[in-house]
Amino acid sequence: MSLSYDYHYVSTEDRLTFIKENTDENTIQAYERLNDGAAQADLWRLLTLKHFGGIYMDIDAHLIFPLSGIIKNKDKELFILKGTDNDHTNYFIATEKNHPILSNAIDIILENINSGKVIGVFLLTGPVPFSNAIAQSKQSINDKSYRHVCVQGSFTNEHFQYIDKPRGKWTHKKPEEILKPKA
Image 1 (tube, rainbow, N blue to C red):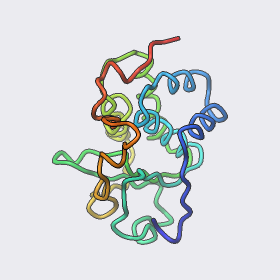
Image 2 (cartoon, one colour):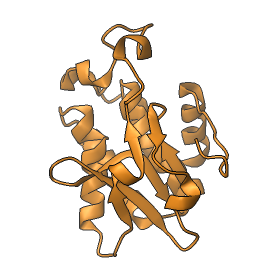
Image 3 (cartoon, one colour):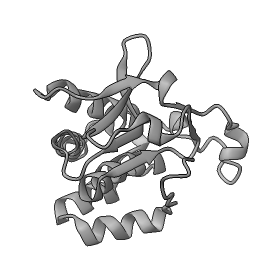
């Protein structure tokens, strides 16, 4: 964590409450079709950041440097790059309120859900739609390598992280298990 910022943990129930209080019926229905906590969190984080602005970081991620040294007052966003193709990832996102890339990413995810695509979390709600929204943007963005901002998963063990649900991690879900049928 970073001492110059406040930290807020949000439960599964709190995520749904936020979505019901701050989004439209289409978004609520799409969110409620998601049958996986990671997929729900993917959509929720974008909706929350669009509404409030701020910084999202997965619970199993840690900063390389204090946020005050990474994010400047003039920055409208900070996205991180990871992988051999330098794709953008969504386990750390910092943006101002109503950032247009977030709006586009949300639209892509809602379209994926509403189309009933049988694809895994990574493609349905995860880093791929987020990265696609960034790629479609015409604006210059602030991004950095994860090696200089935030690393994910280095202090976690899947067994202990999902002790109440063996094989509960999103990577173990079959694509056809991710979406509930339309009501």
